[in-house]
Length: 317
Image (cartoon, rainbow, N blue to C red):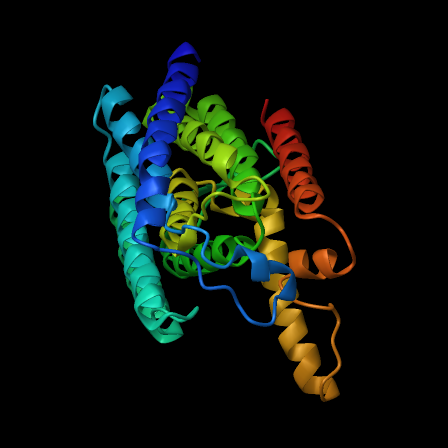
């Protein structure tokens, strides 16, 4: 456990230093966020530096490589997946800046990349024998064999888009991801006793905590798709490769809620001819429209995720 905490502290320090250097550079080159026109509450945020995800993703990755004593294929592949999603996010954010509007890569382009990565990861799990799933709230597991392929596709596409949708308020995605990765790290430690995956999770927790220091309302920097896509990739890869894919539905309930709120909103809107369930989707915008502050919403998401994580850990003991 000392190694995990030390890794988190080192990742925090590196991420903090990276952000101290990165934010002024982003301001100097005027690499600011283009705000969606229909979110009136966010007009004042226009021009806030984005792509801050580069700092905490690189910080977590560098620290993990330094602390991992034994190279494990699962962990190395997870780092490749997370960094690959970061690069896609960088391209997306750069295109948004070039177009001077909140439009980067096309939806089909992102989906194509996600499907490709998901399929490759599913094949890897199948060939390496990582087809056993741990069942949440129980001590049981089940081998799903070829079922890992459709599950991997569902988990990767769903998780990446869920985290991306949740990144809509200052501090929201980071404050939800911190207890998510912390709980996942403890679960992995309990299941394996040790290993590199928990270390990577703690590195992400430390790096995200440093980022949150600059992202709390009013945010000095946004993570952009650079950060949110990468976080989703890390979450999906760690959970899938360790047999904990089903835990995403529990630990990532707030992420899942973001997706469900959008899907329900779209379906209900089309079926009823223009009526809405939420004032605005994803749901965090609905809460904002109801008068709740960004800090309060982020705190609520953090608390819910932490409580669910605690329950998962207790039942795994």
